[in-house]
Image 1 (cartoon, helix red, strand yellow):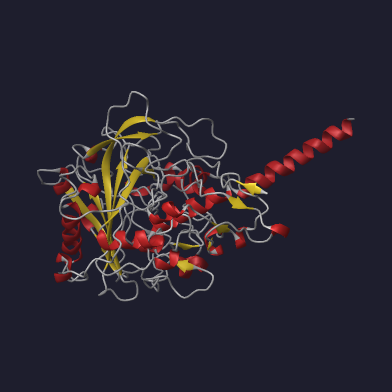
Image 2 (cartoon, rainbow, N blue to C red):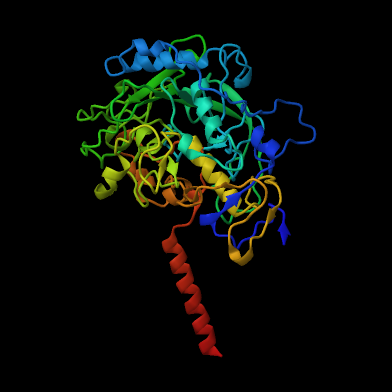
Length: 520
């Protein structure tokens, strides 16, 4: 019996799944640039995002990077600003069409197009988690969507190309980023300036996103999800650097916030450092139940910008930026990110199989201390030596992309998957392996694991910390993500109804059926 790949045999075990591709597809990848379920309007005359995927075939020669002359522990803010300057060179001039950068080409991670929050067609943005009311500013009255795009420099682009060298069979074992790898992520908010005054004059992009719906657009049972062209403002910019000088983790992470009140001729000049982190301080558990923005003197593996903390009794700063929270226990995190996480704790859990990056059911003020050691360990760089799990060297974009690929293998009709015609396959006799042409076996760990839980959107909104009463002293606490799809990036786990509610609904339905049967 002969089946097209788009009609996959559901009887095949994912543990012994073999995937096949046309030889030309394997030789030259052509990954989708954006979610095909949201195509260009027929009358569209504007720009169209193009995935930068002409990855280097050979690892770039080592070079002297400007931040290597700076001690990241003694001058962390200067270190981060130097990396930012490097990252903006040439990209501003080409309006972030990074494949056209005349100084150095930058690259996008594949497979961020799938799912409800997958890449949109104008800028290639993916949906991050929403910011809760008052999370960004006391004037913020409703939930606000945030969208982001990440890029890698040539050393990072080389590794992306090695992982996705065969577009039909990702190779996560290749996720070992060389020294000098840089990734940045630009995060844009739909928040109006009237509600978040420090966004005045920020860098703006138009993008094809969901309009304000008053609900999470990516819930499992939501009606049709329209998108429309809306203006977004740059709110946050994240930076990560593979630096071989860093003990334990091998990485430096940092984040910026846009500040309308800062000096500078351009929006890029008005970006303020929020914090820099090179470790999770895995032995420090002090203040882990405290909410809001504060400085924890016990932390040694990072530094926050204390000038962004409002004085007690003051709840806004005019046009100047401020933060309502950092990460858990005062660790480094951005204003859109999760206050029970940190930059490094989130990215350090990037792996195959995928795993949650925050404890389920936790929120600010209610963090399970017995889970701290797992989520805030200092993960070594590289892929690790766990036979059951492949670390992805702090790349949430690889984690989201591989997870989306596996999800589309399981269900090709999933939103945003697009065509996955990898050639015909033969159904093997007696339920055995499939055989057709060149066989490339898919690592079973790719199709295992759990969704990347980010404690966001509807599920998070049910926790008591979302009440205004939880926002004491004018300092709100709130959820966030990495990478969100990551890098955000495209997680759908935060929108799922908690399993307890499903049990209650199921028991209620059974009780109703029993009562009706008794009446008969």
